[in-house]
Length: 157
Image (cartoon, rainbow, N blue to C red; front, side, top):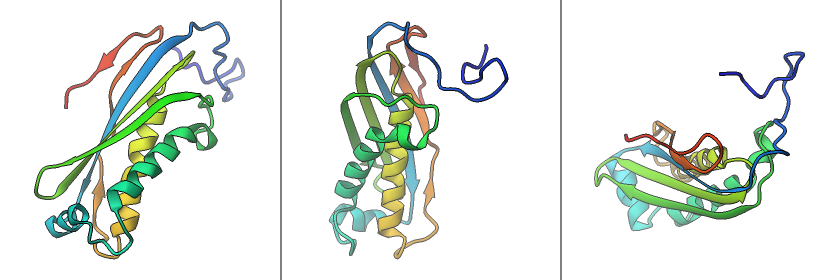
């Protein structure tokens, strides 16, 4: 498979999507934040001193998805039609974050979904680091995408 982010001189370029079809596109990404059981209990109880951790992480994830092209150099700025983050846990020491991003356009939203869950996880870390510095983020991965010329993709983890 040829890498499309390089020009004829081998230098980085933004891919030209002018001739691509406009399609409905959806991407879903996941990540995990592993922490002490007490930290997760305090997040769920809303007793972290900085405020509602999951509410702030949700907003951070949405903002990150909307601004992905500002800090991932070859990403196209996209008009997103929807961004949603959902949180779940294993009742012990893992917080699961799922991000779903949608658009109707000429390129996919995989990077926006990955960015959303990453920013949400980093926000959880930031808000809880005074309580616990050894939290672990990851794995972070694309679990599905639909739309576009390459078709659908799904991984089951």
